[in-house]
Length: 392
Image 1 (cartoon, helix red, strand yellow):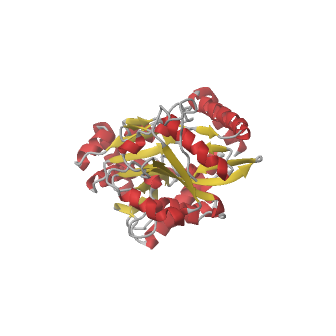
Image 2: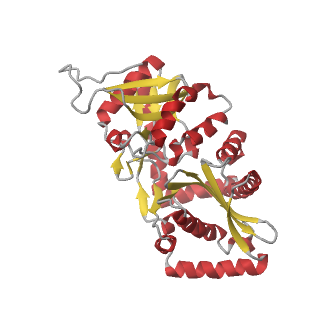
Image 3: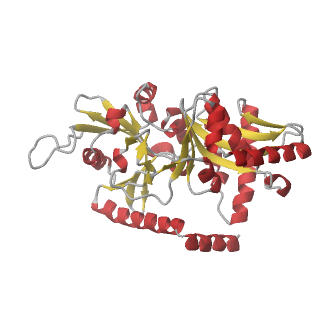
């Protein structure tokens, strides 16, 4: 389907942007050739979560992938400007288009063909999306976690959208790995970590930080992560999303192969092979984007901060291998704020198309505001934490 964005008063191309054409492709297979071509462009703007390998691993693990669609927006010359994978489903009688990836993706930025594409007028882009939605029967778009800026460029989908409950945390990596490490960890922090590493090595033998490069290593590290994460979430009274077989299948698929979409690192006791901490992240050529982490909760191990020891290695490793950015994802955590020097502001745009979609959007926006208020109020957050622990 094609949508021409016009100014209803003048009949000419809308003042807030050029003519755009939008189409919704019926699945990943129909979009793969275009997708890979855009992904290979030197000037493309995207996060690691927009790699075809990451999205296809996620979709292949879904129990029912029939709702998958791919939105493509083109300019008047027919050039593809952006691509956005969507999942269509019904909730309370409303047909919703949600960006593929859900909570597993920290960022739902579209795949922009180049910086010029990222500068599309927000109004024109919203009109194009609405125009493509009507023939598809879409009532509302839930556009997920949209960074307000990416690589110094404003994100048109985030313009005017409400703030998400939490922001993300990241840092730039220097070509010199040791310089990156010094920026992430103060001299005092590095000294304390060296002492903790010595203490662990005295009781467990030599330690090794290992990147999973074989199916056996991937399986072992993921098994350790699932066990460690389940124990920690149970202690906090929280549901374990990683218990879902579809999520486990997705992580295993995405971490497989010679060029994985997810890269997993672990701190391992060399003598016994015991996994003390794990860290997994979505990757592309220039960025590591943290998705999940866990550590061994044994008090004798936990007091030596195995997660921080692994993170220190991760920063050094990523810089040494040529990546230029590292982020630790969305959500508040001490280790994120201590390590990162960049706050990535996140918006959660909701774009209604029909009257039914407007009603749904109002309710969804209210939920986002309430969640943000709880997250940003220490008293409310503490109360919620106590209730969860009581339930556990």
